[in-house]
Image 1 (cartoon, rainbow, N blue to C red):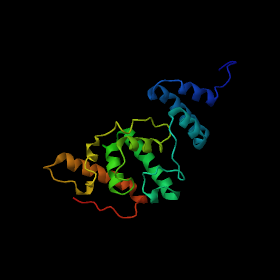
Image 2: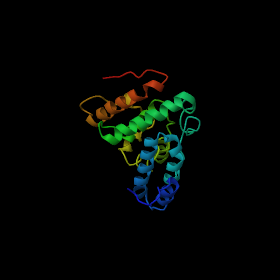
Image 3: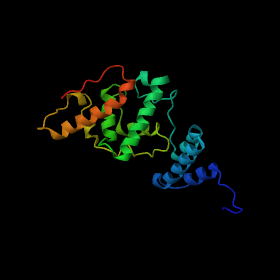
Image 4: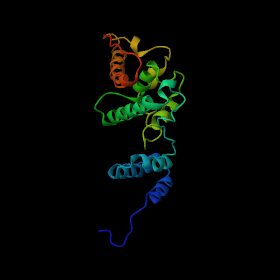
Length: 193
């Protein structure tokens, strides 16, 4: 089918992708390598190539961002956290829920997973480091981060009243997202009406 044309090596694809000027121009090559790695069953090996294209270093269970609470930075909890973040990414990208990364940040701060003083730009980098091939700024630009303006206030204290419909909606969404983190939390989340 390809005649005398030899297969294209992954290194060539990486080099070509790196020559593209923007994340959106590099994204098809990231998707291509990720898809090929899944097809071949070597997703871990592909992370090096994906990191080379995106310019991001990837987090793993032994190398987690310092902005996370200590108990989420090593071992099984770190692995579980990475898995949860990737599941959240799938749900957010699919649009099957009204979740945004701003809501995820609110939950991670309020549930003591992420230190409260983390900037939105740093949050973007942290999340992207857990999702191979995730382009920079895709987290920072997905959601209304005004939800993070009052860092000393928790979504648990948001109103559920019809008199504050935006706050009630944010609270409901945060509660849904918090349920995804239940396997790694050291305490139970109480749903309030």
